[in-house]
Amino acid sequence: MEKRNILITGGAGFIGSHVVRLFVHKYPNYNIYNLDKLTYAGNLANLKDIETKPNYHFIKEDICNFESILNIFKTCNIDGVIHLAAESHVDRSIKDPFTFASTNVLGTLSLLQAAKNTWQNFEDKLFYHISTDEVYGALKMDNPTGGDEPGGGPYGGEFFTENTKYDPHSPYSASKASSDHFVRAFYDTYGLPTVISNCSNNYGPYQFPEKLIPLFINNIRHGKPLPVYGKGENVRDWLFVEDHARAIDIIFHKGKKGETYNIGGFNEWKNIDLIKQLIKTTDELLGNPLHHSDSLIQYVTDRQGHDLRYAIDSNKLKRELGWQPSLQFEQGLKITVQWYLDNQDWLDNVVSGQYLDYYRDMYGNR
Ligand code: NAD
Ligand code: DAU
Image (cartoon, rainbow, N blue to C red; front, top):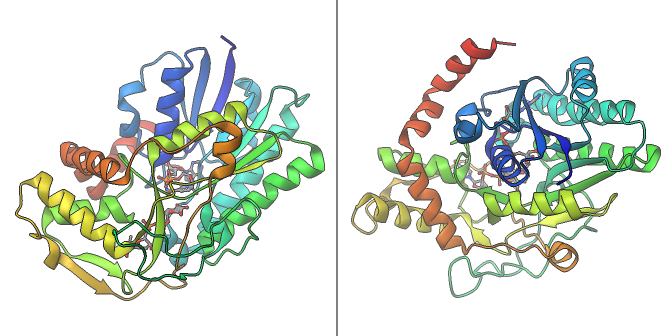
């Protein structure tokens, strides 16, 4: 099997940890370098099960630190990059857009420039940038009531395709859109071998409990209010995180350079329907009576600039590279809720921020 040195950025985060785990297990001949700054969202406990594998290496570094990144490319002889490191939470971007511009735009630029400067020739090299469907803006809701079944949609005829015009609305999506433009600019200008994928909402184990699903599972567990933004009418397209990691593997190995691939679940849910399903599943697994936690729902002020509907058309990825989602949502949700209930120490540590002190002691605080 071919030997490779792959740099995965943001590998201590939610999706990154699933990608690192998949690659470490599936490709024992690859050296996997997980480069992560360990912000509040980075947690090495997400990778406890693989941290002693001989092909796994952790590097604590900030992607914005260009000189260090350049040095890592040279000393580790990096020939492939899977770039996930980012500030990822929309609500935080509304409060602090500068951090998003810095990490998501300048950090991506720093990695691109390091790859361009280090790679003598571009044969057998790849810079794979992980992006989001939010760069495309928001879709209309032609059919607000959806299908007969909750989550059965469709809420509208339009989907995001790879040709949809960029129209980001939040500082987060604007920063991701900008990073996508830089990646394409490096392909067009220097011929740097790049590929981009834009994925819909992920859910599953190890997601930071500021995001809807883990936050609400944790709140149901503690009998705390469930803050539903606006009327809960917004629609998201949900994908199990391991299906995303599988898509990333396929695109990294078989994707065409210069191309973009959309990844999604064909699984649209109105927030309020999803929340009711989540309450039902969580109550069931906790042994509570049906509807026990319904009263925790609280409608709160809407998110500023809240995008109405996201829905991905991932047919190109299916047609050209043979990927499709493997799990039904109800099944994935049950696995996810069970995981958080079985891993309450992980959840408690993350909520209390204890893991930050632990890794600060271990790796220093910079
Ligand atoms: P996350 O917030 O859980 O993890 C981000 C990781 O990046 C953390 O480990 C953090 O420590 C690290 N990081 C942040 N700033 C850094 C810096 N300056 N230098 C090095 N490391 C840094 O994010 P996630 O949800 O796993 O998302 C990963 C990627 O996938 C992001 O690029 C995001 O835009 C994209 N994405 C996420 C979703 C989703 O639903 N979560 C969907 C589509 C695309
Ligand atoms: O679409 C892909 C994107 O999905 C990723 O690029 C982002 O990194 C990821 O965070 C996610 O963005 P969202 O804003 O869609 O995810 P979030 O979990 O924050 O919210 C999902 C929906 O639930 C959204 O419509 C807002 C709503 N919401 C969220 C929270 C945290 C609530 O109603 N209440 C809440 O407390």
